[in-house]
Amino acid sequence: QVQLVESGGGRVQAGGSLRLSCTASEKIFIFNAMSWYRQAPGKQRELVAGISSGGTADYADSVKGRFTISRDRAGNLLYLQMNSLRPEDTAIYYCHLDAIYGGHFWGQGTQVTVSS
Image 1 (cartoon, rainbow, N blue to C red):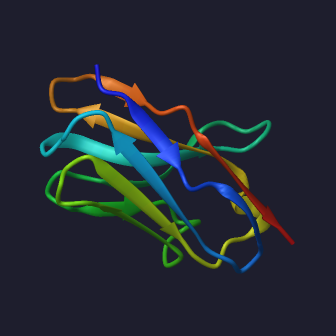
Image 2: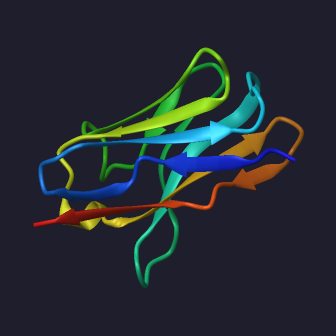
């Protein structure tokens, strides 16, 4: 059972930056996708960015050019660099693993608040 723990959230003014981290309880080198989702109050959880084990990244249109997803070579860290933050980016951000054997794992989430 893989455990995921997010960190790096906080409060920032519009235009600012934050870097989120997701630490996995074990090294993961091959997987279907590792992703960041977010959920704002009263809204459905949405996919923000994802990356394959081959390194291919994909982004929601709303964050393209502002957010960058990456992972470390050690195999247990996933990052989300968020620049030019907007108030509409305010949400709880979740790390997700779509494991190669079909398991799905979520972190507990980290709050990001962007003030105008």
